[in-house]
Image (cartoon, rainbow, N blue to C red; front, side, top):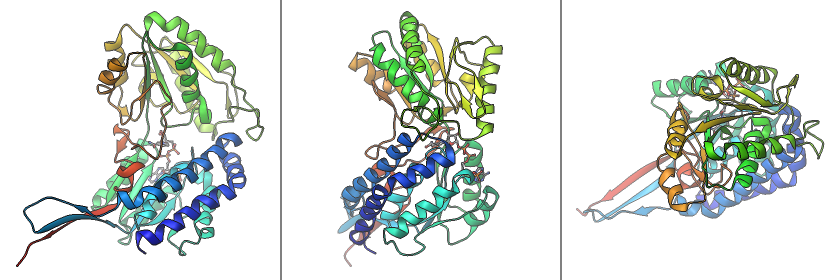
Length: 412
Ligand code: NAP
């Protein structure tokens, strides 16, 4: 199919998502516990991304003339073929769709190995493409466990792989891809810093910090995992953070008034509890939360967190916010960069010039100034250091799985 033929199919995918959003959202909530409201917003975001790429794919993938000493030279963007997607459970629709929409528009086929706890979503996503009239098999869900990924990736029909998940899984899959000289994109963990400088709007910063950390029960790769706060405003910021944390209402994720559902699996709740306890043993102070009933972990706020503690050094994938003191902006940047990860980050300051200067110093794939760190189809998404490589979304994302072919024509 030409790109012009593919576009209407992807527009239809957006329509199918919206027409069935309640059903898909309920499935996500049932399988991994996010609130129904969050799940509905997730389906809507996928549909919006269909519209974005349907509107822009012809620009992103248009032939590009290049000035050279040839009579004519240009670049064409051509599909690679079937791409394997190994995906996590935390945003069961969004993680898959942000790969699949640009991937299919670029002319590739998609094979999905979804996380084992969201196989219902995996089948539903395959059905979205079927219902939208895409040719049979163009997007296919494989209900396999992680040990079977190697065989699929080594199959010569599979041309590339994208993985969103932990560093452990990413390293393993990228090594297999490397052994067969296949392209890989890795979207891995993060330990995003949220820096609050003394001149920041503390009310807004605290509200957004808590939202960023606690949404999806804290299970987001780009959650604000380390609040790094200039000492002079630490007390005021902390008071506001506590107020916002106290407003979180835990309970039945299907209930409209619930703002935090359970964590997705018992072992994830065990992990966050361990990270909190270990940090407290090394001198951190628990200011709020910490009770637990099964997968329901009461949102926690840890103060006096320092390098060398689990809550600073490791990725925390649950409702645990941490406060880290910085004596000035220089120390704030040093602490932000003192991490193996480099996914997202946020910076709060009223000084626009300072914001742009410091944004360049932060070692991360994104810096959001005075706003919520988020993924947005219009801008590239991805990390550096152990947060991975390659980009999703925007023009950068649709060009990850294409052959960027040079055509150089001379006269005889
Ligand atoms: P995970 O254990 O790595 O699982 C992710 C996916 O990889 C699942 O489909 C899993 O299958 C599969 N998998 C696990 N080990 C594998 C292996 N050795 N070989 C092949 N496939 C393997 O990650 P998770 O704990 O579910 O997800 C949370 C992690 O994902 C966090 O670190 C989070 O930060 C990261 N994440 C990153 C982004 C991003 O965009 N950068 C977005 C969301 C999440 P099974 O379920 O069958 O084990």
